[in-house]
Image 1 (spheres, helix red, strand yellow):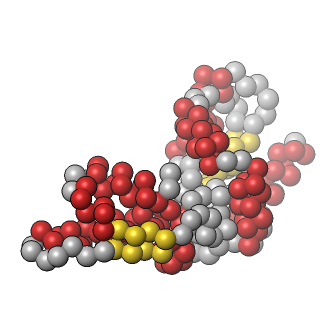
Image 2 (cartoon, rainbow, N blue to C red):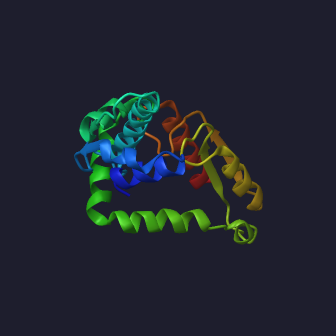
Length: 190
């Protein structure tokens, strides 16, 4: 979804007057930052919605409507703290994000995430007989730790290793990395 469509959807779902949308100018197009996600569109539409709401409040109090203009690159840079890992954008992910952008379309990515959200392997997990190690960050921002507990409980004899991290993918410079490597080596040698 592009920024214009996202803003329109947010605005109308909030019950705001459609007329106000004529007073918005959104410049730029994703990708504006090295990411596999449309961070520019997300940042731009969010900031535009907040600014437009403030202008609409003024209009309802008798002021003339003002035009809201939000540049996508500036919006994305303003929000980089929200689209990073531990407050930073790892260089390691730049190449990964670029690979994802070049190997699939936005439609395919959306289809993947929609399908992925519907998958339930709980019953199949109960049939697993192979030794199983489940590694998961306690504060994972992508998949809640409760889901790791559920899958580990469903797999007979599995072992759950909680990791001190908020990352879904572990980076070599974080403390959880050493635990991941140690646990996998021990698991494979047993």
